[in-house]
Image (cartoon, rainbow, N blue to C red; front, side, top):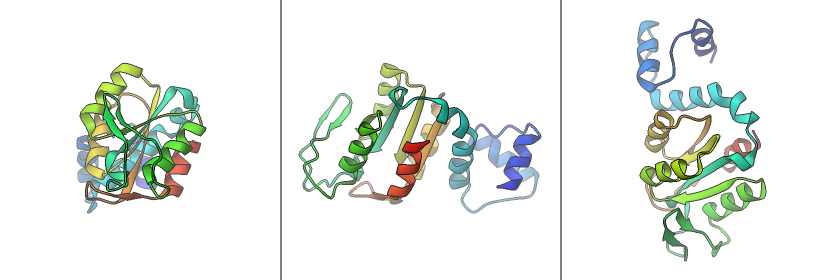
Length: 173
């Protein structure tokens, strides 16, 4: 992303999707998928500060659609689904286990409004978000802490999937 790095170096505001779109219009670039570029940009902008935060001060948010919904026995509560790791092939259970073993607080949530409530309650210093592109863009605009976003490989709100290497990399920052 040399162009983005040059823009940042020049002090161009790229803090919101609207600002990014305006900057790209000015330099004559119109990427087909500005949302994906925005997510990558935010990850890069926050990387250093995100890495300085200890895992115990970070929250990880997973979408409920990563659960094996037909097998899942988790109950929905005030802080999302209470995962009991009932299925060996469940991505949500796998990520929850990885995150918690690294010291993170992990939440499996049905949507963005619950994320806002949990963030207000726990006041994290950084957040890892795993979700579809639409949800990630909304969260990146709303959250006021360093973030790292991982987009789902498969969309659709039911039994989606995510690149586990990207998840592991996000948890290792």
